[in-house]
Amino acid sequence: MLVLAECRRLLAVGAKHGLHGHLGISGQGAPVVLPVDYGMDGPDIVVQIGEGLFHSIAEHGLVAFLVDGVENGRVWSVLVRGYSSLMDHLALGADSPHPRVLAPGNRLVKIRSDVVTGRRFTPTMAAADQAPA
Image (cartoon, rainbow, N blue to C red; front, side, top):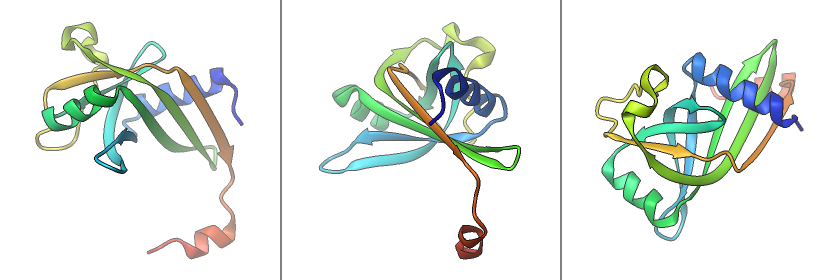
């Protein structure tokens, strides 16, 4: 397990390097996990989404965000769980996420980092051999 300070550092590094994360929300009868680009607002995650997804998030409020990366040959993974809220685009400025999808929507959502956990591990050769080509 990673300490909180290291988790926050890795989240910031991922945002700076344009990594995409995965946003988990409650769906109609089952969870939904979608890839999203993200930015940071202090310790919190910011994503830009469309109206449909925004209404699903607004209905449930509690979401999860996961981002993975590689640093010095070791894989890291950080999970953030917290409540979401609408955010003003002007509040972020240059730190706003830059979605790579054609029409990302115009809703900016902040995810509070209420619970942050992370881990780091070294990929094994067996896992690398089993990875799809």
